[in-house]
Every structure is written in structure tokens, then in C-alpha cells.
Image 1 (cartoon, one colour):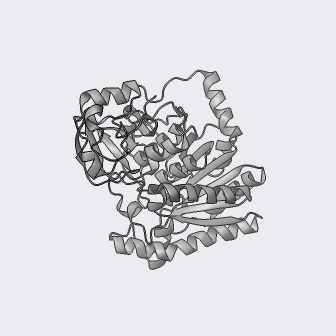
Image 2 (cartoon, rainbow, N blue to C red):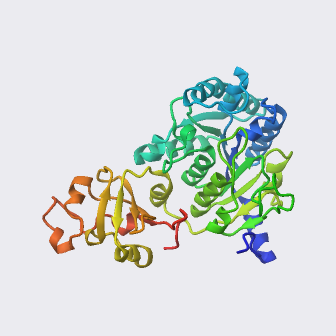
Image 3 (cartoon, rainbow, N blue to C red):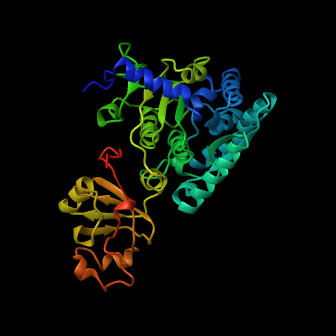
Length: 398
């Protein structure tokens, strides 16, 4: 497998032209960009990025920022070395650092004639469909007013990012930035960290590692190249690949590059060969993006091989006859994981029944199921509310 893939020059040029033409851009700035290796605020570097974002905004681009660094700034103010270890201490550091982080962004933007807005998010803002839509409306209004939203997870009250439990909506600002890019219909997601893109091996350990300039698909082979995380940040290359997969499945381009290199954002937006460029896949509709990436699954439905094949290959609804078991508690309208006979996730879908009614239908043909629950649907999950996923977590072509 050749992860870097060979691209015709014309195709690569067209992709970089799309980057240059991007109208709406989400820029994620990692902790290892905000903070220096000594644990102190890298103020000059951060101001350089703020100037770049402000400059692009004045040119007419719609810019959105997702900024890490609150916990790091809080730890620095408290004189801690390295990452805080306990959840309570992480939240305390976030409470100390968040105001300082936002004041840096806001004050610097103000001096450059740009208005910034702080938006703090928790997992519930994505898991709830209503709150998800309300957040999108707020961001759209801010963007239309010419404001640059600066987003971060509200680590003081939210624990999803700090603890990063498996299966949760987001466990780091990399994935948060991709969800935001998907939500606002961004043309481009730029993730700036301390590593200049994806390499053939860990460049910190292998001097022969080569940067991969372009990736057509975040395949299992590409994911296998990721390892480790930064000294102060929570996300490593694996989370950046997950973010790239979400963004590209939503129809956006994505770039992972080093935010420690002066002028990197300007270089990327000018179509330069900086970092790794990830090419977009087919676009999901807004609701299907929410089902695939943003909603927190409430439970799981196990299906037999026939139902799995129908979902993956036949673009079918999930009928009760193909269901073998239910897992967890869920209500009508919740998003659930759909698991194959091997336990691997096949798809996600929005259910037509709560757990109690669904249990009455498991394994039954449509004619047997009718009348067992009030005002019933033929399907547990209708095809328009199913998003098929590969075992590696990627959206399959449908």
C-alpha cells in the first residue's frame, strides 16, 4: 500500500486551486502551537496566526477559529510542569486559562479591526439535534456579521474532551473543529499543530520519514501511520486523521500542517505545498452528517449477516426480521449504532422506536410485527436515516 498515492499533476493542481478559492475556512490551532516547548505562551507565534486570520477575513474569506490552549495556559499560570493529571485539576486549569486565552484572541483581533466572539461548547451541543441546529444558526449569524467565532470546548464543565471516553462525540479539539467545519459547510479545514502533516513514519523517531503531501482517502492503511500525541496537547496524529475523515466526508478539503512555521496559513491559502492535503469525498446531507459524526449513540442494534449485506450493498432500511439483539437504552429519534454479527459497527441510524417497543419487534417479519406496537413503522430505521460506516469508521459510498 502506498499511502502517499501518485496524483496526476492536473488533479493536484485542481485540488490546490480549490484550497485557494475556499470561501469559508475553519482553522484549528493546537495547544502545541499556542504554547512553547518550555510551557510558556508562544505569544509571537500566536499573534502571527491572528494577523493571518484577520488578513484573510479582510480579504473577504469567512474565518472560524477553534483554539486549544486553555488548560495549558492555566497550568502555566499555576506553575505546573507538563500536563495536569487529575480531571479536577484539568478543569481548574481550564477555568484559569480560558479567560486568558480568549482575551488574547479578542484583544489582538480588535487591534486589527476584526471582531471576535467566544463560543464554548459541550458534547450535549452536538448530541442533541435541536441544540445542534441552534448552534449552527448562531454561527451562521456571527459569520454573516463579519465576526470571527473563536470556539473551544468548555472544559470547566464538560469532561468529554478531558477524559476522552470511547464512542463520545468529541474527545479533542481536532474532532471538534471537524464537526464545526461540517456544521457550517466549510470549504476547508486547516489543522495547525507541531507536526508538518502526515509522514510515512514518526519523524521524531525516524529520520527517513517523509511527509505525505496529499491523501485521497483516510483508509485503514493511512490510519496505521499515526501514533502518539504531543507533550501538552491531547490530540495526536490519529485524532487529526479522524478530523480529516469527518471533514472530507462532509465535502470539505482538509490540511494538517505545522502552526509553528511562520506564514504557514498564508502559504496554505495561497495553494502552497504545506503539510498534508486531504481530498474531499462525496457530501452527506446535513442530517446525515449529524447522524454519522455529531450525535452521541444511545445504544446499539445487532443485526444478522443478511441485514448487514442489505444495509451495506442494498441501501435498504433496517427491518425487524434482520435484528438479533438490542443493547442499551434508547428512545424514538435517538441515534444508535448498528453492529454486525462480529460486533463491528456497520452503520449508525436514527431509530423509529424506543427500546421497549423495539424489543417487541426483534426478529419478526413485517406481517408479524404489525399491531404489536401503536402507529408502527415497517422499519426500525428507515434508509434515509441510515449512514453506513466501514469498520475503520469511514463513510462508505452509498
